[in-house]
Image 1 (tube, rainbow, N blue to C red):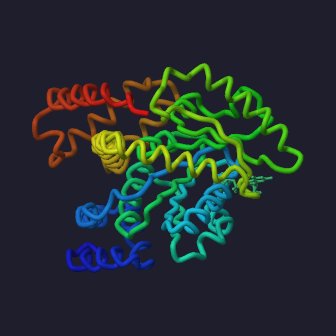
Image 2 (image 1 turned 90 degrees about the vertical axis):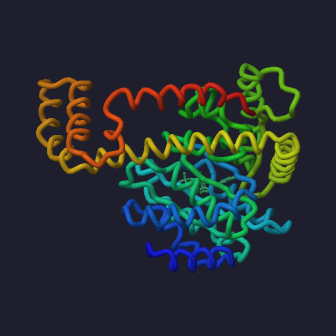
Length: 362
Ligand SMILES: Nc1nc2c(ncn2[C@@H]2O[C@H](COP(=O)(O)OP(=O)(O)OP(=O)(O)O)[C@@H](O)[C@H]2O)c(=O)[nH]1
Ligand SMILES: [Mg+2]
């Protein structure tokens, strides 16, 4: 799997949109095996020139709000109008809805049956971080395979949707009626990140409640709204993902926004910033994984854990002990080549400077 000729074959397969090659590539990306990571890095380098052509849309919301149904409905409409649609569904290990990965696939039966669609559920169970990295890299693969819309489904209960917000061009939050203004446990930060707020299940006896909720959300949104003339500020919609009502308007809005973003150069600027962020997110990921898997750290942790629980060692001390084991027993670690604290100072400052210019978009 790791050899260059094999990677070349994989690239050829992906460019032909061969399903087996696509699936193999994403499996490679999801693997935490060091050899696989090298191969994945090589693969992405070859695919990147062909990527970047899709409209990237993140869809989040509490379990059961209708994300998969919504994605299938807009996916079908997009395919009908000539698009090729890839769906990446992230299932956080902490998901309350347990086992929804399989459910997602079966719930998107109609979409997954189409040649112009590709659906890939990505379990995060047991993985150490990396949701953002894997999703970003899988997105590149899908784009290279010619999909011009990538929809990312993620449950709005944890960190993953915030990571995903930094990967996509648009971020949609699905909401339910009747949950009052407590915003259904969704973090305020997510709502502020969102481009479209969509109250779903506007059908049957709930239709009126949805319209009431929509006005309620309009009021909430008015509190955040700044003077925005670009048409890119957050907006509220309602729809029935099951019946397909309200979907046209949402798609029209996405198309308008996408062309505004493209024509004004904001899309390119946004993606450049995301790319820069991805580098640091990958470093963070890689370091975290490396520390967690480090033999000496794992050994130390066995006894240290008990000391922390018993109150003999406090939290910051315990963290420092683990890190000192990691640094002292990682002679080949690039972290040590420039020596200790001074080498870490620089990137930190650099990062702060980059972050400063980063949230002005949208
Ligand atoms: N009445 C009504 N029900 C809907 C609508 N959209 C989804 N549902 C139903 O709500 C339930 C959950 O839908 P999903 O699309 O699986 O929701 P989800 O947000 O993807 O759920 P998780 O992936 O488990 O977080 C299913 O029984 C759907 O049939 C809608 O527009 N109207
Ligand atoms: Mg779902």
